[in-house]
Amino acid sequence: MRHLMNPMDFSVEELDRLFDLAADIEKHPEAYAHKCEGKKLATCFYEPSTRTRLSFESAMLNLGGSVIGFSDAGSSSASKGESVSDTIRVISCFADICAMRHPKEGAPMVAASRSSIPVINAGDGGHQHPTQTLTDLLTIRSLKGRLDHFTIGLCGDLKFGRTVHSLVNALSRYEGIHFVFISPEELRIPGYLRETLWSKALSFEEVIRLEDVMPKLDLLYMTRVQRERFFNEEDYVRLKDFYVLTKAKMERAREDMLVLHPLPRVNEISVEVDDDPRAVYFKQVRYGVYVRMALILTLLELV
Amino acid sequence: MLNVGKIEEGFVLDHIPAGKSMSIYYHLGLDKLDCTVAIIKNARSNIMGKKDIIKVECDINTLNLDVLAVIDHTITVNVIKDGEIVEKKALELPLELKGIMKCRNPRCITSIEQELPHIFYLADPVKELYRCRYCDEKNTERF
Image 1 (cartoon, each protein chain N blue to C red):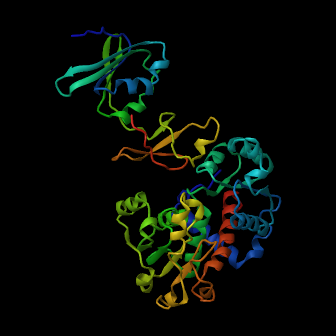
Image 2 (spheres, rainbow over the protein chains, first blue to last red; image 1 turned 135 degrees about the horizontal axis):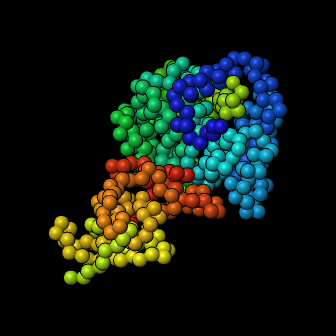
């Protein structure tokens, strides 16, 4: 039995198989509409995350399965003091697979170690959010046709943004990637990530101005500056609108450059950019459902 | 010169940096064992100037010496049986440490989950860096 805790849990070859399956689901959704009949997904969300939870639930319903679960810790027995270990043992009696989001880092790993059903990490604090990374990779692969040999700009909160850290680690396994980290001084990538890039001799640069690097990017991954990651409200207010992607900035970009964003978006992408065909962040949400469908089928060994 | 007698079975931990013996005493859990322990502090050493030595008389299978490598991998471990040195153990950084270091990250699941052992994995052998298995936070505890 396998779990998914970290995007690196899957080898490049396994990811290829997963993405092939997701691509086939996109082309032939009807062929998968009954694959999970009689199976139940438990969505155990100890903190609210409507988007991720609905994406998981939509994925399971698309596969003909059903869904149980809770959407915040207050409506679970965690509010009575139950441990994650006990909760997953109980959930294992009700469901066939579990997607868990928890504010504490490593909670899904604890669950996986005690579980008799596959556990998917649906986000653990600022630590990992592997299905977002799989979504990002599938979006790039589907729309660019490859996962190697491109220049990707990652812009915004690169210090606390776990989606950025996970995506960089995941892409570092592919050849010919050049990373352009675009952030204010205070939100630069953490030291350990820089060391990892150095140790793997990967190509990267760190800049502050987005406009200057736009022309050379094949992909631009925008991120939100998240209030919940700041201890100091003043710092958040000062940095939250540091970058705003506008139509004018998009004019400097290549014709085939793609803009991705893990969403929710606040001010960092102007709504006027939404109609630009290069803005693919809403398509990305759809790929998120396909990749979660492929993941559920894979972990349940139904393919 | 202070003399401490030979032991029949157990360990002699030699070349401990001066002043670290008490830390080792607690981290090896010697305070919880009902056996004879001799701690010699600030012994004269030609190589080190001053050193600490610990002698433990116990069954040689009872002690987990993993923590020693983390404290200082140059410590010499002599295994004693029938009053003689039968082995000089080489200390290697263990790939995993369980229940020795505590994760200090307040966002880590170890901060709330009952009876969850604190487990660290060796992330960088050159820098002797350990990270928490659950949250990947690096260990900052010094011995």
